[in-house]
Length: 97
Image 1 (cartoon, rainbow, N blue to C red):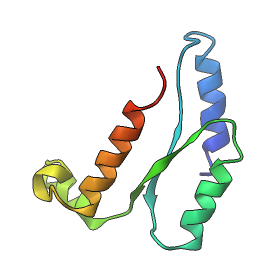
Image 2 (tube, rainbow, N blue to C red):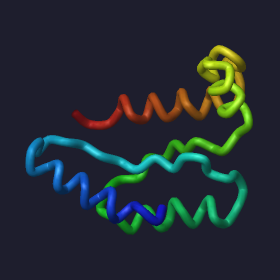
Image 3 (cartoon, one colour):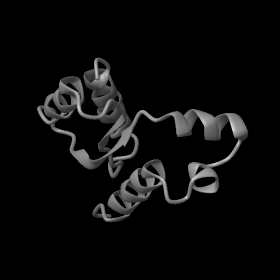
């Protein structure tokens, strides 16, 4: 969150070399049902870069799958974590070209 403005500046600089570059914010490691989780989304909405509706919540399964060298879909394909990632992928694929 604190680096958002710097990231936007880097993206704008990159647009000098590749003008069709696309960017969006994705809230990652969101802590569910907390004020800070909601506040991050609200704060990012103040920037000109779009914020995706899909978020990725901080979950133990992400660390466990990384430690196992597997995707969360391999360990718990019907878990909330897998559903979050699927929703994120779907939203990214729906972005305009």
